Image (tube, rainbow, N blue to C red; front, side):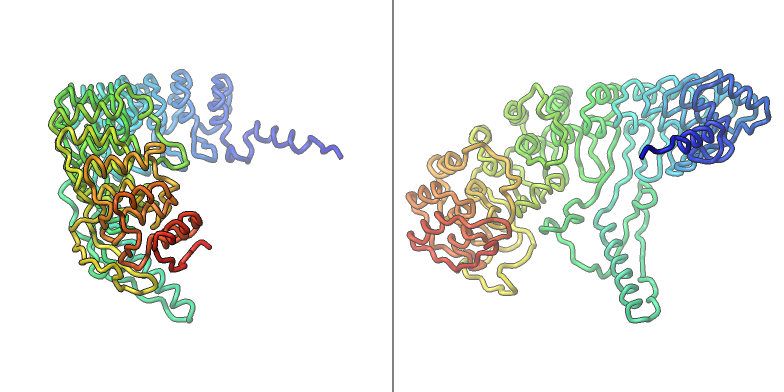
Length: 586
């Protein structure tokens, strides 16, 4: 049956008349301005309609004139008494904010001349200058500053200035304009203490759970817990960025603990305009800042990251090499021990999630090995070790279950099975024997059994954990889901193992901190070829890990969704290894 078109037509007529609906009640002037119909606006004003009538979103006719850059329309509305400070329903954006965001210079000037407040803030604390900076409009920026806008105004959430907004957006013209009116390139955004924020979250969770438990038994809710904010930091972090103290957190924190993301990050933020430009790969912006006196080696107060390291972490190799040529110090490491050398190698081999990822690293003229050689020539120490796992590789770390605290670039190359990178690092003095460092974590055992079955001496916190030979054998495959994320040289398993054993003398029976030998990790991948090679070189496949797992156990589905390798099980059993029949995924 064909439906009548009457309801659709009726709604259209009502909307055209400005009655109800999504336009909001009685906003015919705003509706006409939205259409850009100057004649209709004049007629409506002559008929006595409200010049400040707002649509449902709070947009008045002056907002629409500002957005469209219609100076003629704005002048008509201002003569009719349009409210310069009218705010939108969401965000409280004034017409000046709207004009600035749209980069409508003539409207910005006209509104300022009419008395608009150049320092007005949205509900989130952004000024018109923040928006003009994002739009990259030099004339609008200059007009706002002439009328009193502070070139270093900070929005309250992260403390970012207009210069930071322009730098992050890649607006080189806006950056130069802001620098020309006195913006300070040395300012850094606020720093967020993640550990302190986590402590607040734990406290909130305990209070919520206590209230829910009380409601379930019909009792009155308990009073809120004792919260004691710590003093504000010296740089004046804004609301929500205040560090806090918590006397009795729900779970202890420890540097580098597996699964403790808050402590892993430590602190966040603290980016300067130059760091933001480096993060996004905006070369013109970066060098405009440097030409105006920005410090090429200024570290983030949050984690000590330099612009060179920031560019490298994000795969902007060409920009990083320009920084180096311009005098950046490649030896500076972050607070976590990350150097540009480690970052270049890691970026090349970093696993990518299935969601869209930046692809700039695939569009660089500089290849990662050339970058590494240039950095080594410049004096970067190839043996600098990570002080903790890097939070920005946590996607990979979580699936591997391998903490990289203490890892060197050589260890990272071994993990990627990258013989070319390993040889390059060795050429410049890399130590191939350095292992990662054991950090506080769960103890050995299954189901509450903490017995050490390996017969090995305990490894203290800070002692050696995982050696390069374990990385090249497939560490993590038996403890997590490394197969889902581990990027490495294709078909590089056996060549990398042969390189470590035959050319560097690595011990085929070396034990990691969990008591696993290379054969355990090879078994976890079902790599019979590597197992036979290791046995040929003297490997003992009967070795038992601290938690009691044999090499067969690692081949027998030790974690969920990892299926057993029957041929590997049979091979290891034939070589004398014990099968405890502990398949988890069977």
